[in-house]
Length: 74
Image (cartoon, rainbow, N blue to C red; front, top):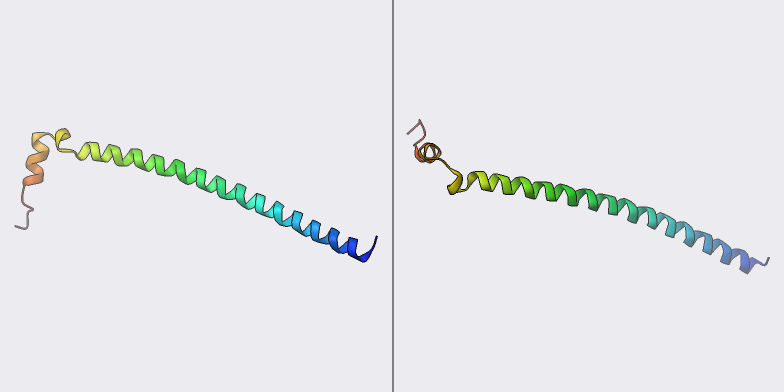
């Protein structure tokens, strides 16, 4: 092998290592994004449940009366 071939082979090995590292990084990022997407979906469901519980149509008359009462310090 000539010096040129050794240099070329070293460059190819270096590029293969970089691609391998980038593949691992992409895989890790994909797992993170997938996990965060599941968490956002769960939070969206919780927000919807809270909104439904706080909507005026779901409140009883007692809830409305309590909401309209003045705080004790008035």
